[in-house]
Length: 481
Image (cartoon, rainbow, N blue to C red; front, side, top):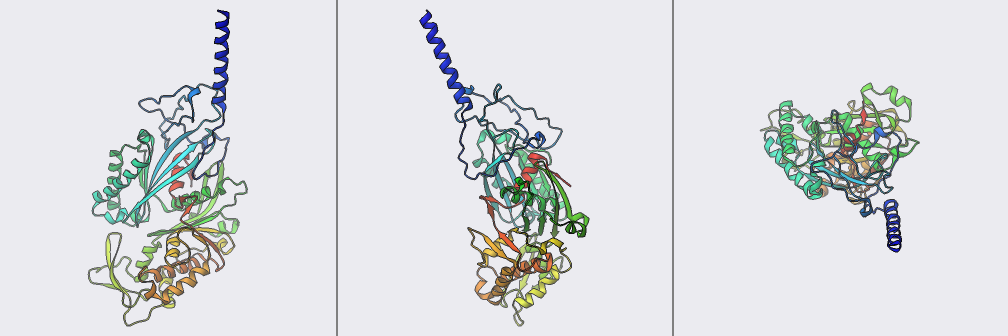
């Protein structure tokens, strides 16, 4: 009997050390796209703990956790939902604690609807999550094209939700929030038509197996669009974690609107700006005072209409809108939003960069505020149609992006406009678009020729748009005012 008791004691002791080794051993994650991690002592800024769901999550004993149990929470988005932390393990909490969760953000833009599916890893309950990866998919045209057929617009959302179902494990569907924010395309529609589209999307969401938070479908205001795009880029580049508050500005050119956002270094920028152009945002234990504005009607497609003199025009069945920015023999119908326009070059007139520049000047001059500070040497990240048209014109490589100066847009715009026939197969509007971008940067915002622009579509394989920032807004309740 003493021998048996001794063997039993040794066996239990060995089991204890094995359990301790398993419980406290570090676990190395191999992440495809590891973003900078950050700790904060402010528990208000951490992601809310997970919400228990039905049926309860089955937790294996600690000694069998290899790798750590992934716990998949829904996230608190707005009061009055009371989030109570579940019991994951009996204390003490293991050093290798980790949980995985997802978020779905729809970007309903004027030219297309995009779904962003984010996978996060919460390695430290008191710290910020790590963004593991993003699944991105898009459909065209945008929701605004279905202003008279909202049910068809709803079908495009169903199509994109199928991507989410394939990407996110089924057992996590009920805990994964789904949100749609519309931008300039719906802002330009009559209120009743925009509301009908949003109501249709909400019905589609309610039919889905995902978690639908309060205010899950809405039209985003222009200020938030610019600020949240700034959050995305500066999070992905790591600038939000630098105590020096060195950040980069952003330039976003959509179909219906364009945004500029940056953190001013000079008080003169703040003092000379219209009051509504200054926004404060509280996030990640820091407060930022940003210069930001969204120009509705100055997106690339809206600018085309304004250049053609077709914005708000009637008689679309018989009117033909001409421009020296288009090839002389070019003539076709072009649809933007819910209207179709007949557009043409000037067969017996002149075409080219100089005449085109004068045409687009009236779309920009005196409309765009010129912030004092952009005349300096700050670096701006430019994306969306800035990136796309630079690729179309051969200014940058589609897979790598690249650094360019404002003068590079001007030089390439001249080349495109003087060789419209060569570039017509790519796009008959390329001369107009490149000239507009040049004019917007120089005559609009007031950038110097030497201002450096980082043209990019993705940072660390994540789309540069407001969508990630908007997801953080839901997760962390950023205070934008």
